[in-house]
Length: 465
Image (cartoon, rainbow, N blue to C red; front, side, top):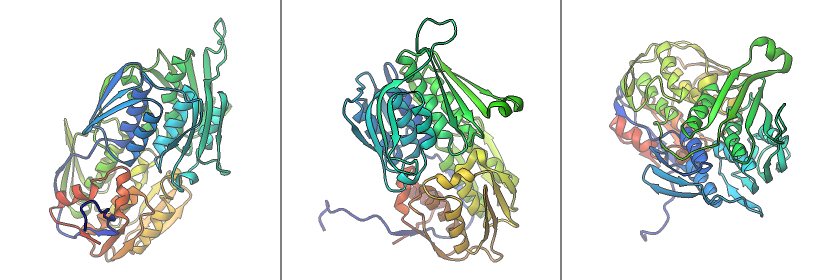
C-alpha cells in the first residue's frame, strides 16, 4: 500500500481493564478559552500571541473562519499569533463552515453581526438541529441590516447581512446611537450571552459608547460567563456583571444585566489553561479504580468552572488535594450522590460513568439544557448506560442512575459522534471487561490525543478495531 493512501480511522476501541490508575498528566489547552481568545484577538487593535492553545476540530474551524474574514493567523505548535488589522467586511456572502462547534457558530454569529459584512454560517447536519434562535432574535433587534436562521426550527445555517448594530441616544447625550441594549434568553446556552458580550467591544469600536445585555430568565452554566468576562478583560475590555435581586427579577424577568464599555480590544499576550472538562476524565479514572491521578496546570482558582468536578468526587468519597499548580483525586468514589450540575454540565457524562461503580443511586439535577448539545446528553446517555446494566430514570432536568449490582456488563456503545460520550464511556472499560466504544475518532473535536494520553496514563494498550 502506498504511504500516501488514506487510512480509515479505527471503527472502535476497547480500554483494557486493570488495577488502580495512578500518575500525573497535563491535558491540552482549554477549548473554551482558546476560542474565546481567538475571537478577542481577531477583533483587537494590534497583534496578539496566544500560548497553550488547543489544536482540535473546534478550534480549527474557528481559525479557518477568521482567516476567511481577513484575520492573519500564524500557528507554531500550541502558540498562535493573531493580527486582525486587515479584517474585512465582505460585500458578498462569505460561506463559513463550522462543523459541529457550538462555540464557533455562536461566537462568530455575534461578533460578525457587530463587525458588519455578509456571511453564511453552516455546519454538519447535527449543527442544523442545535437551536440558535434566541441569539439571532437578540441580534435582529439591534441589527443594521438582517440576520436570519435558515432552518425552520430556529437552527443554523445563519445568514448575516450586516452594517453593524444600531443604538439609541442616552439621556443628555448629543451623539446618536451611543448605546446598544440587547435582551437574550439564558436557559438554553450561556454561549448566547458570552457571544454577545464578546461582540460588544466590536460595536464600541464602531462608534457606540456602551452595550447593555439583559438576560431573561434562568442563566445556565454561569461559570462560563465569568470565564468570558475574564478573557475579555485580558484584552482590555471593561465589563460589569450585575445579578438582579428577586424583586427586580419579578418585575421584568431580567436575572443578569451585563454592561460593556471602554474602548474595545487591544492586542496582548495571553496564556491558556489546560482544559478542565478534559481533566475530568483523568480524575474519574482515579475515582473508578481507586487510584491516584494528578492533573497539572489547574487549581481550584482556575477560570474554568469544571474544576468543580473534584468537589463532586469528594462528595462521593474520594480524597481531593491541590497545590499551587495541580489538583489530585485519590481513592474510589464509594457512594452515589444527589447533585446540581448546572454550573459544570459538561462533566455530567463523566460523573454518570463514575456513578456506575458507586454504591446507591446518583441523581443529576438542573441540566435540561444538555439535550441541546452535540447530542441529547440526557436521553442518549441514558440509553448507553442501560446497555452497561444500569437502571436509569430520565427527568426533565437530568437523570437518576442506579448502578448494576454486579458491576457494569460488557457492551458495544454508540457515541452519537459526540466527543464527550466517547471519552466518558470509555472509562467504564477501566474496570469492566468488553466495553467497546464506537467511532472513537470523534474525540478529534476537542481532544485528538485523548486515547493516546489515557493509554500512557494507565500504562497498558487499548484494543483497536
